[in-house]
Image 1 (cartoon, rainbow, N blue to C red):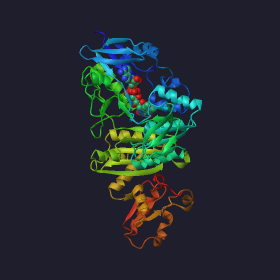
Image 2 (tube, rainbow, N blue to C red; image 1 turned 120 degrees about the vertical axis):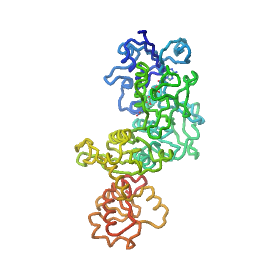
Image 3 (cartoon, protein in one colour; image 1 turned 60 degrees about the horizontal axis):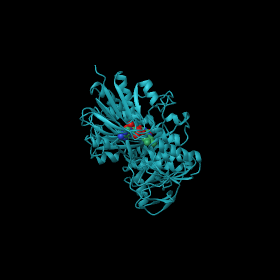
Image 4 (cartoon, protein in one colour; image 1 turned 90 degrees about the vertical axis):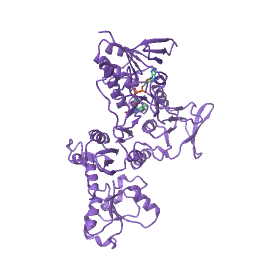
Length: 566
Ligand SMILES: Cc1cc2nc3c(=O)[nH]c(=O)nc-3n(C[C@H](O)[C@H](O)[C@H](O)COP(=O)(O)OP(=O)(O)OC[C@H]3O[C@@H](n4cnc5c(N)ncnc54)[C@H](O)[C@@H]3O)c2cc1C
């Protein structure tokens, strides 16, 4: 058999994975990896933690799990892959099946033949055209060079103030990294909430946590200009003309697929700006594959194309492209459900499937949601808090989305939910799902399963709920107020309370204190407690005693994202 020639353009997550997979399937093929940057297989997801000093050895960003740096020598010796670094692929001739590349150090151009080509060109910064964005001191956090710059900022300790523009995953991680470097940080997000992969209540809870760590969080206004003196950043001007002085700014306003090479080669580009591929990761040319941040993929719930620039997906797609290039389109990458997680100090926030906002944007309205709050394990095992939102299709009872935030084991909750969503599990199966349980790890009824129980109760009409936001609006409006009934004990009230005019009757005392409640049995009564478990018990007692308009505030006090008295 003739030696096959595989060329891979882009040598980080998707590209390196595709090349390595191809090698495992064909020991004889000529495999060449063309990489513009000096490094290969960079762990971009680890950049913020190197900047923030979680680890100090830069090589850890480039190493295998066993600590071997993945440089060209490693690729050649271990994998027999020729990795050309600091080399840019500049043109593809699809008729001749060649790639022209430039050696960036010398400017020399060469051409290489391919039988199969895999494009893994990633994504670049999507920077808004803001005056001053080119000033010295404004950076992104997308490359090793950016990471080296920000790590220097940490090590030199000269810079004391920073602004982060954009409250997405990278923006939030950049805030933590800078704050942990002793720098005062302001996060500016133009949308009304940070982390748009969350619905507002959970996003606000995360923002509150970030604020509690000393980061100033400004939402609902953007940066109008970066201000400089002698070419150096000295501050930013917000849309309302507020000036925030700072010596560095991280622009974290998202990424856009790198498709110039593909576009110039005449490959089809989708409406969202990514390279179009089928489920085998084949582009509009059967001999060219593409994978990672540069492609559009299918959303498994909506069926629409989406951009999903995530490291896990880049690796999974690279693996599929590498295998198919060698074995003839034998495996598929079905798509994404947009699963993501982000660390914010000792807190995590993540989402899988659709949010309520994205469901409604896709005209998926026949849905039920529940916000649930609980510890992740028993208190005697040092529990962390979880606040989550589950979303179910009312007809099929399929789980469509799940979000979770807190300082408990958020990742496990999301992983469980992601598998339930991808497995198209329905509520009736979920409510009795067999998950691992022992006190060091979870509650006997795991938080995720409890969320399924609550939403089932709601769908069966056993539980009427109200969201914190609606309660907040009622209180703020100053109109006719409902009775807000906190069912906790007095000791708890001393340490944590909303202070919105609530009445305290511990649930244990309620049956003998019913005479303190409105005589009008149709009066609106909103019950809650710390997590609204006792709020639910309270509501059941009231309904049993004839009150008809009783609701439970979802998630209780810990899911209340607005200011509290205590
Ligand atoms: C700070 C940060 C944190 C992140 N955190 C997470 C996380 O926690 N979880 C998660 O899932 N994802 C995370 N991501 C996203 C994840 O890193 C990306 O989705 C992933 O790296 C994409 O891999 P890729 O191979 O498609 O593209 P890239 O990693 O961008 O690699 C593409 C490579 O191709 C090269 N290239 C482009 N054009 C050419 C050309 N013409 N010739 C030669 N070379 C070329 C580029 O130089 C680049 O090195 C994070 C990203 C960043 C920056």
